[in-house]
Image (tube, rainbow, N blue to C red; front, side):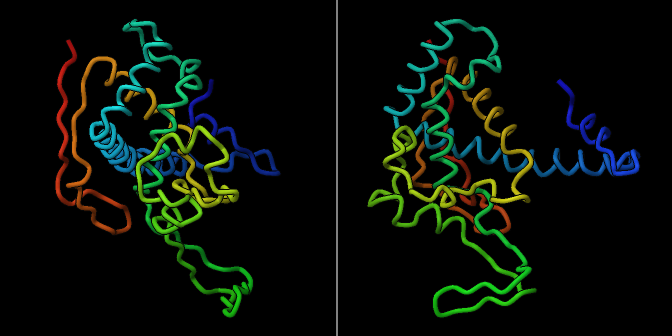
Length: 225
């Protein structure tokens, strides 16, 4: 399997020459590392905080891990990840309630009519991801932490675009797949050895370019017996 830097180096234009210079590749990789580190770390903390706040959720994850790893301390392998369906549901629900990019911005390349309003070409358009993720289309429990909703397609919005933690379209997050793999792997290792306790109700968030905890993290980690 090729690394991301190798794939970028291999991109060729119509003339057969590399699309990016060594400097371009360095800049792109640095951007991915720097921007990805902060967002994925915050996502991990918020997900662990939610897991620690709901004992029944943590118990279900641990039962799933026991089925997949059979009480083994072996490393998580790529083929294990698709089997962690409940853990994935928990991560998605965490991203739904607390999207790290609470607002998306796009510049319109043509006029867009919305009922009684017209948005004109060349204007910047802002979309509240936070509001979309808590819209009534998610049901009366839209503001509740309920991972089970992801296990039943009937309980999800008919339009999948109401879930956009990684943005949408051609300019969506390049690290989408990596982020989910990383979160599943890290949480799997943690919960096999540690008990998480927390209280997400005390969490105070700061709405900025990125959604971040402003009040500190009410979370504790204790080694399992």
